[in-house]
Figure 1 (cartoon, rainbow, N blue to C red):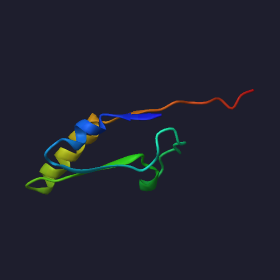
Figure 2: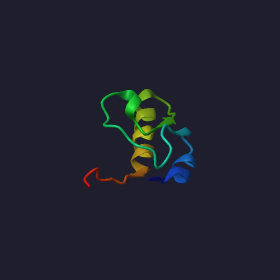
Figure 3: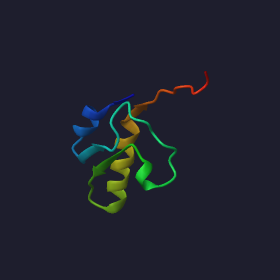
Length: 73
């Protein structure tokens, strides 16, 4: 339904890009492989380990708010 924290993450000095791969409100399939994710963060660092740390920290700041609909009638 919405993604919270995008502006804060985009403002981090080590983050180069935040991309939503699905529009808020669109159906989210069960995550089975890489293409099922809802978004991604591109972060940099002085080493691969530091870049990974920055990316994990940034993605942890994002909050994906989901809603469910019932197919029962």
